[in-house]
Length: 222
Length: 285
Image (tube, rainbow over all chains, first blue to last red; front, side):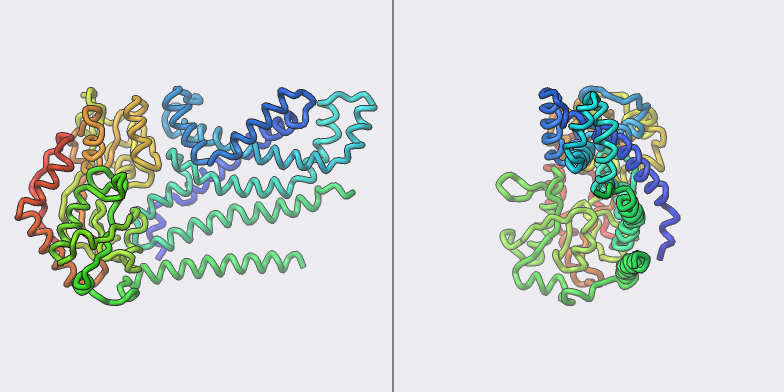
């Protein structure tokens, strides 16, 4: 029943999914934190930029963003991100798209974490003479991060599944291999589907369990 | 207890995936054909109505028109077969059958037969029967009208090529005749056409029938290379084991070919792009 699997590199495809998730997660954590900083900053222009960026990106379908990266940035504007061929370019463009999109969710999670830090702490820090970046970096953000591990885990799981959208611009991850297998093995469609569903469960379930545990350990007890 | 909860969740997941896998295996081996009644195509046609599966997004083969009708070569073939089975044109219900769902829709009885650029393959024959073939298509290349640098598969290495993700054509390119070509895969043909038009890719590859349809839709912009990279026998898919229905469809296709109706329709839909319509294929199924 599983003989046909030897003709396909299922593990290789899921490895690309893992890589896409990993790099996009790192990128969106960084960009999301910067956005969150802007969102609570005292400069109106920064607040305005972050707010409009988030509302624009968060309300645009991800397929559209990924496709725009390929058709708009790559084909029309000639942006290659130093990729030598379509394979490299699409891979990098997809990560760019995922970072741009997922960072909005990361930012909103972190902002909710910032709200859990009692305002008196920020006021006390200000009274001690710390500047905005110091208040945020030393006092507020470390506590905020500890309280949002749970929500961020949900964002990470959503990101893992969202990476399947990279196949619309031809990144050879799991769902692209699934399309190929459905095309060739039309007599085993349900089996193929089950294999890929199981693959994603194997990726996301431990992530959820592990980060759920971390969230419990890390949470600030007030 | 924390640990037992983890175990319970794990057990549920394992059970679900096993059930799904068993489901798939059963379908693969069983061959189907017993759900939805054993009524043959011919007896259903006698009731005066038929449901036919087509593609609705491929110009020249099966395309939905703005007024809700359908047009294309596959649609003509479907109408001719229905007419031969005694069903009026107005009594045919056309249903979209996306590539990945064709076998299931036949097995479940959602459609009576399918005419949707459906290539006859051994894997598909495990689940459905085919009548025909009614057309012999080839994988081909579509290039910009002013581009003479691509004459065949050997010119592809180093060129930028576009196809639809997961399709047989894309896999052929990757594994077979142009390993060094730079392949861009998109979810649909329209993205590839955009790329071809603005010069981001050099060629679009898939069945020549589909390419001819797109070329005819955009007159003067694109041309077919005529590379004949593979043979695709288009068949009419129907429920497995319906021999009577298969014979009836085969007879209808034969009649369409002999009457000249076949050639007329093929030239109408594929001709404007410069596509040479050959002789109709012999019926083998």
